[in-house]
Image 1: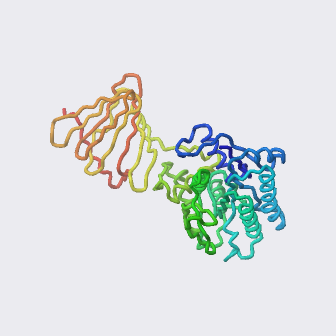
Image 2 (image 1 turned 30 degrees about the vertical axis):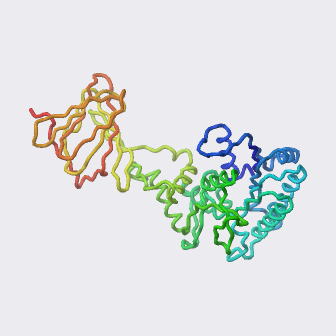
Image 3 (image 1 turned 90 degrees about the vertical axis):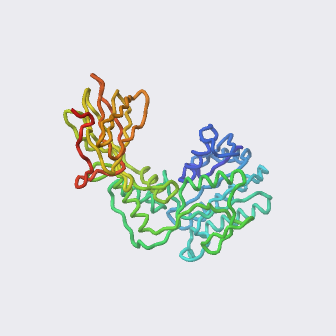
Length: 407
């Protein structure tokens, strides 16, 4: 299948073309039934001759071209309606009745706060033109009215408040929130791209609209992405601020991992926020606790599920020699050669586990068992990743010294 994407350099176009090319190159094999042989990317820098060739050969068209922030209101109609006519006339001239997807906007409803929107009128005019073309030519039309979009590669200070907030917070710039209670419906770019790729093989979701409300309807005139999030402006800002603190902790220098279940709004906002990090914030120091035995560094704290640390032991060094009542740990040696020992309190039997970075294994430190870790090498450091189910609390450490091997 040959796919034409207009507005290919825009936010949605760049994300869509990237995934279309991933499919074409065999890098994204999970889109069952989607076959992409060539991607025609059309934007302002292309010529009419190129548009002619693309329209002659395309098997499917995603029309994402449009204007969001013109210098004057009249440019809305010219950019959003005018190019639509050029595209359809070019397809018609080549007798190409392939399916065409149109990116419209919730503002095309011309209801509520969008009742007097010049941008909305230009989008509605484009919708009507496409529907008329579809009836005349017998071509399949897929019209999507997008809510607020967000995700990587979205231009800040343009038409996305989320992009602006992420960019400004990441770069320590001020943000302005006039009304935290403003309700928003937001759509993450990857969810939209998945829907569009489904539409490519006839699996679009159809609907009608009652004002701004989607009414899923088999055979409906419009299309929609079923995965959106309803929230408030204030909640979005709060989540982005939490993302910022999690990624670049201001004082402790220990990263606190947010609880971000995959598919949640928090997950998608974290992903979006990370894409706006400036170069100097991609790296930050961690607090290393260093002595003659080696070092111990806390890597990541979670809000409710403990912490991950890295322990480095110098040659011949023994660490640990303590036990816990309720705390439990997992040691994973990733480099070097070591011995982990455990002994249940009140007993004399010692369990020995020889480990090395040549064979990655997890060894559990059991509650009520004193334990240690010994570097058996005379020349190499022993590097161990350690997980503990609790973040260390010096006021209630639950750690009691007792050598594994009694003298």
